[in-house]
Amino acid sequence: MFKWGQRTWGKWAITLGLATVMATGAAHAGTPDLKDAGEVEAFADGVIKPLMQKEHSPSGVVAVMQGGEIIFQKGYGYIDVEKRIPVDAETSMFRPGSISKLFTWVSVMQLAEQGKLDIDTDVNEYVTQFKVEDTFPGKPITLRHIMTHTPGFEDGALGYLIINDPDRIEPLAKSLEEHQPERVVPPGTRVSYSNWATALAGLIVANVSGEDFNTYVQNHIFGPLGMTHSTFVEPLPAELEPFMAKAYTYGAGKYKETPYEIVTNFGPAGASAVSAPDMAKFARALLNGGEYDGVRILKEETLNQMLNEGFSHDPRARGTGLGFLKRDFGGPEFENFGHDGGTTIFISHFGLSIPNDFMLFSSFSGPGAGPVHQAFVENFYDEFFPQELPYVEPPADFKERGQKYAGSYVSSRSSYTKVESILRGLGSVDVAVMPDNTLMIGEVRYVEVGENVFRQVGDNDQVIFQVNDEGDVTGYVLDGMGVMQFYPAKFYETSSYIMTLLAVCLLVFVFVFIRLALQWARYRNQVGEAKNAYRATLLVSAANILFFVFIGIVLAGGMLPLFYSVPGTLKFAFVFPIIALFGTLYHLYTTFLVWRDGLFEGVWPRIRHTIVALAAIWVLTFYYTWNLIGFNYFA
Image (tube, rainbow, N blue to C red; front, side, top):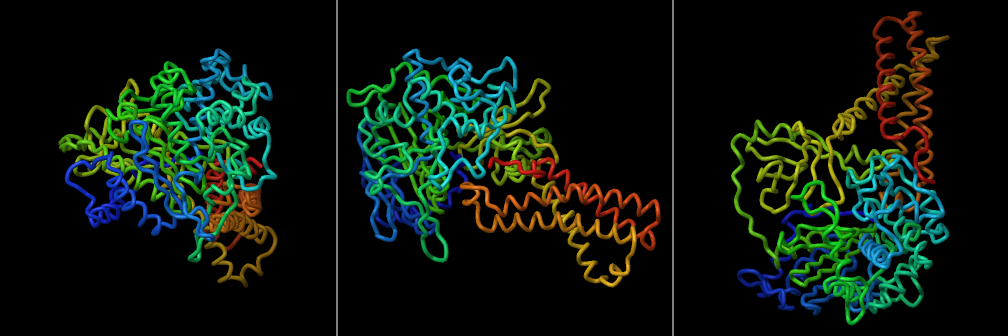
């Protein structure tokens, strides 16, 4: 499902936790003892409890395991706020989002090691219900591409990825066929996270095994491992409902329960619900060469293949294994692998280390889940697996050399043919060389530590820039965030350009109506072609203003409803760019008449009319670039 950036909340969040830890007297000098459950609990309580209250996260769970033993496991908050039913760390269930993908990848590799499928074969060999478009002839998509998030698909979610109405559930094959994304780059060339492709892998599992995906996972992973509080079935089976942490939003000083999120239409990408002890059982198998308590879910060589084969844009950046994400938590020797995951309500982490025989699982819910998750996960690793942070002096000549990195960059994980593509431009990241010879990427400062390698000032996060044979920068990747790449944005893809364009054009259109109000009598006295020209100005201005008014109305309701469905207000809003298109064409015709026939009195009114025409054309380029002309979304 949704990927959440790491280390974006900074060190401030830990202050609350450390204050509490120190107050209890549990903190000791040096690295705390992970095997001391009291120290782990004091730390976790100190970070989690105040943040959950501050950020309105109603429920959470944490499990820490090392050496095959649960060291610490605790629930926080309530699975039912109204009834005050507390989280039970043993039985309460949470939605791990994209961590569900790990069950899909294990399923794929189970069938691969049985010889029932080949991860390097064209996926169309296994998809019988429809075909993946042959956009790049001779370059088919394989399961290896899918497991490393390099199939080359665009991304999307608006109104279809997660729903809240069980009546909209469709068979997996039908949903995938209806929502097939465009292939935008050849497979194997660029990493870009894809929920659709993961769901396709789940469909292949079903086709090859002869069992529907949910049944397959239950029979070959959950059941054998004794994961009794885990399921992909939606809506949740009746016998598991009492254990599920309910979903809530927060507003007007109270929590409001929301329907159970449904991901079934793309289930293999993120539909599971799990408990912390069940995730510990899964972790034991992964940390023990694929076997737990006498049950083997993978051969050891298959698991090694999943960990050691994969994709990275640069060997110095931890990328992906075959499905597993390799993270920078704990440092290079820690060898962190696993997955994070998010739905619209839950944010979760599943981190493993074979050298340390270690697992951390956590999940938090509600509108404040993100801050709690990010503060706890990052600072847990920093606290119990600290890394050295040697001082690096910024190179004195970097100010001149570093200009090649400067500019704006956009994420490879984006839509390119649907209205959601605008998020790519609005989310562009600015990179600038600073006077102190450091590099500012977004709001974070980095120092050069190697050729095209930069480390965050005050932290171990690294960014690696990519260059071509001529030395030109072609993008950058984040060490430990191997499912996305950032590449240089064209000028019109940058948020600064977009905001400037919209500000100027809307100001022009609003001024049209201000002038109309101030000079109403003059408008009424216009006749013939002059009045038609004025009406053309009013039409094109009104169409553009109303589009953004209705977009504002939609956004005022929050982003959450946009994941569940495309609201009627948004659909209505997309009528106005079409009106603006035809209105602009008519306005250009009247502009020609204004100058040819000398309409209006004097040159300045004709210039004003022309300025409106230019603004209308300019904003049309915006609509065209971001697929806003027409109804470019999945119904």
